[in-house]
Image (cartoon, rainbow, N blue to C red; front, top):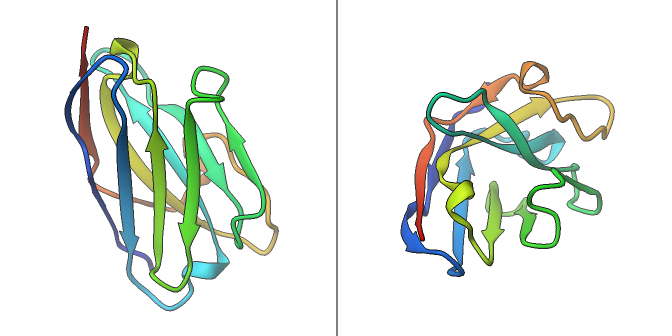
Amino acid sequence: QAQLVESGGGLVQAGDSLRLSCAASGRTFSSYVMGWFRQAPGKEREFVAAIGWRGLSTSYADSVKGRFTISRDNAKNTVYLQMNTLKPEDTAVYYCAARSSNFNYLFRTSGEYDYWGQGTQVTVSS
């Protein structure tokens, strides 16, 4: 069972950058597909990015492609989300998620993930 703790959120201005981190417990981190999701007030939780076991494969939502980068450091049991050129519409609570899988598949829906962090708030002012 994995426990996930996000950090790095905050209040920034449009055009700024932030890097979110998600630290995972457990010794099987390298076998988890990891994802980032976000949820804005009054909206459903939406997929942001996912990364495979060794970080060689990634997937992004169209809304963040070219601006956000997901990466992982298996030695540190940590996954990152580098967010550049932030926009007010990126404002949301960002969640880290993990899925233990025998297949290195990049899951894009929240129901496919087993473990979740508590979330970290990102607010982008215009």
